[in-house]
Image (cartoon, rainbow, N blue to C red):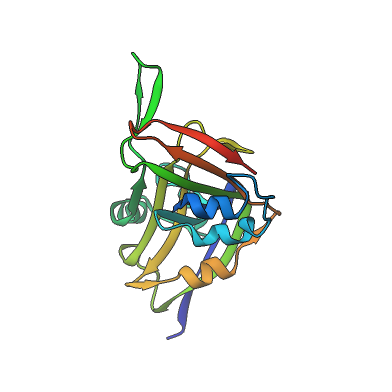
Length: 211
């Protein structure tokens, strides 16, 4: 019996790469972000080394959207229910809270210090095949993994406030199809948009630099 190939096609905007990481004041001085040194453009390349808190990459789609359109096969209502039931959504937020009496936002989940926020939004498409082995496609063996995140309200990129949900992995029968998914991605062009924030002792924060 021949193997069954499931075609996957996804396209959405804004998709892309998003990250948050800690950085020292000394490093910021060295790059010319703080202090009096000239700006060092290597910062825009090295920023990928500062993603120790959060990093996500993929096409924007969620279980709440018409995600069924990403599968180039006909799905019954029963199959759709199985896929929804097995889907996993990983949430990331910084527990941002607005203190009305003070008129400030606080970030409860970050310690005082400096943080780099990087976004590289674009329009992504991905098209690849999943080999489901002998026999027909079994919806109960498919797992979609989403990452839903929001960044500080005072930090925006070219698409505005940074809140998104990316499809970050697809599994079938316990095997990840992430490599085929990522390798097939085609972008419409992008640039890294970087912001540096300082979280103060009272958990309020301010944007100290943007690219």
